[in-house]
Length: 523
Image 1 (cartoon, rainbow, N blue to C red):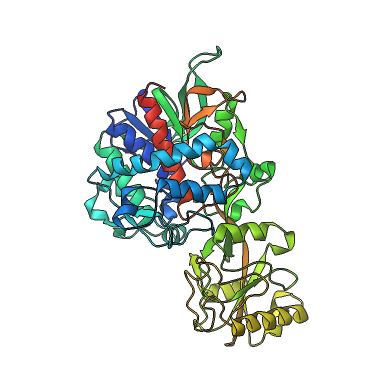
Image 2 (spheres, rainbow, N blue to C red; image 1 turned 120 degrees about the vertical axis):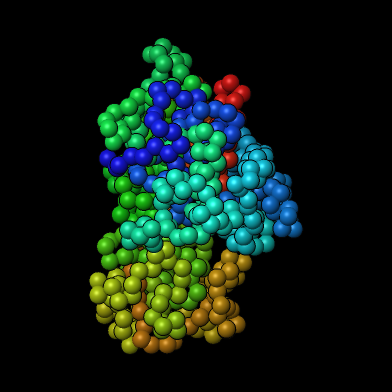
């Protein structure tokens, strides 16, 4: 058990109005709103640091139709977002989640208005292309993010327990003095919570939930946790909000639910998001749905066997175990990850690139790692010829050479005849090639490199079944009184799709807000 710290109070009380399990973007949104409404609020975080995977993120929030997009002059609206989702989500997801989708679209502008009314929170638009060419798509995206803020401007008790960015955290280093993206989001929300009387207890892992009585309809009002000083039992008068991530960190649960990838390759912080809280809710009657699988991405394999989130390929090509391409490498990361997961010979894959960027990976990998360490470990190989790469990777030399020759031909003509790379707005968002198609850059400057890629994820997206008020439902579709859920602890409102930058965070924040709204209404 991690060492614990109580931020915002001298000691835990036996009862609170609201208890929040988890400390990511959804959890802290709910907690901050509850505290601002005058409810005594406790956040329970299993590790010594707050923020979870949200603290690693770029902080993009898919929250359509808000004043932030209006200030930026974007052609965004609730109606446009509705049309976009209708073009992106499959018919089954649209039908099953109609009320939740409408609730998300209605709540997003209200949530941002409430948050921006607080002096500790400001948002700004970030240009980041959405992931599908569908009606309602906003050119260069509709996602927003919190503005950067200096660490010194916030409560030092809060920033002291803020999880650092992923590259720093994995190396055991402290965070930066300027907080941006997910760092800004988590720190701002936590500072709002503590300022308004809320409490954060780190080092407290929730191990069980209980009802007020065994009778049918008994309220879920008790949280059992293991803290640094032993077990604690806490009661929530208004509601318990579960927003503690998914089960991506549990190899056993991934296998049980058929989730592709591996716990070793997930982007979740080490020792987190192993799914016990979902099981605890199921034990008191909650229904579950694990069909959404995960928020996938190609993962640059590290020498220690972990994977790192990678996007924005500027050049190079990806091949499977047969030495052939199988998808447009410039696809949005979740869509490429799903292509990887579609066939066993694609995990691991090899990404081929040349020396145009001095031996660095022509992509954004968080973290990339040291090329010399990669080469020493064999997660990268280097050769003067493509045939040499084939020998070093164990790929078929004839097939690999033919693949590279065909790809280079596409670069010359500007048309990827196999997968259409460079035809979509997202494909060219990170690209900078000088040929007829800036997303197609030939493999031309030796020595050549091949980096091993695995199937990573930003979290799983299956879990507790909830309604439009974020109430957890039982198998009969009835709410479990007192129990709410958001974030990757729930079955995703988007089903198997990933609409755009910040969709996980935006949905988590919105449904946490809806949960608090229902608590305040007496739910």
